[in-house]
Length: 447
Image (cartoon, rainbow, N blue to C red; front, side):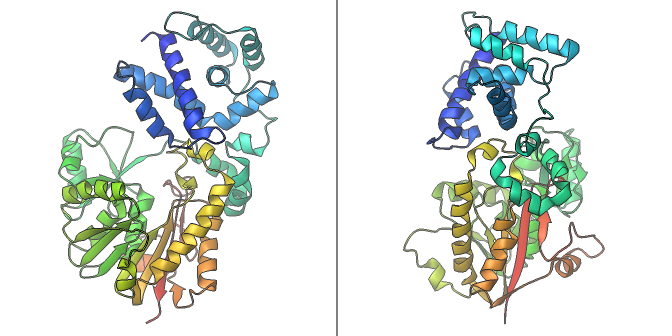
């Protein structure tokens, strides 16, 4: 593809994202699913061109809040063409500014496979935007921090003076973390096997099973992955599985298992002894989990589809040693991995999720045996979904449960290793711990 054809394709992809993800009334599909469909329908776009088109489009998605502000300031609507034009121009100064203007002129050249040439209004917009900084001193707090306005009160309550640093970390590149599968070997063996294939990695700071790659690169083709010795899993997610403290011989329920990442980790700490049940409301997710379980060598796990009218939970009330609730949430802790989510997620989603989370907690709590533990986790940075849910649950019928303080639990599991944070619960963020944003509370049922 020519450079201008790549720009035209990026504009078309941005149009698809707007229609299916961000526009009022849109289905709000995940952007990566929309992009996959887009490229599947255009198989003539090769690998290098696909990367270039994606970089254009994802650059706009990552900076959409700021780009919208700039365009509104000059009285222009955020069309896909203007959004990409603004992304290409903003931040250029001096010679960079001149090169940016030249790049725009070359991209919008009206060639056969390129986008139409800029019209008069677009040229005025380009002139108004050229040479401006992407982060403008006149911006209000939301665009300046690249955060939607509705999360600001909650983020301020969570981070206080550290909010600017945390917002910056939430814009950074997410690392690639791997978890060594204890059923097939330890972290040292995994690191050695990866090194033999030229894949460098370092131990993670907190997880005793984790390895971090210095740069994003394909891992699924490596022998260590194919043989089930490593799984891709953020360090924070590994720590939730660690705090579950699932031991050999226990009965464990992963109540919102999804693709079973934490099921795999807990099965490993159980040494394949005992029974772990991966539950979910999605048959597709559970089907996808089956392949991962086989590759990891897990043979003490079963899957169960939760459906309306299902009596599975009632029949097993009070029978599990551990019940993990990795609750559906806003996913604000993963925004550096999923930049489109900061645009798709709306305040009404939070209100709906808070009700769903509480309902799941109440149902899952019934599965815990006396003396057993209920583990509640989210990948959210919002206090309402985390500490707020714990306060609500414990105040409304959760009197049978009491929190297991993090410091004592951590010391018992990893003596001599400093806990990632203070407080009764595990609370992680990209800025403070370098992981995705996670929350985990461990509650013990009275014997």
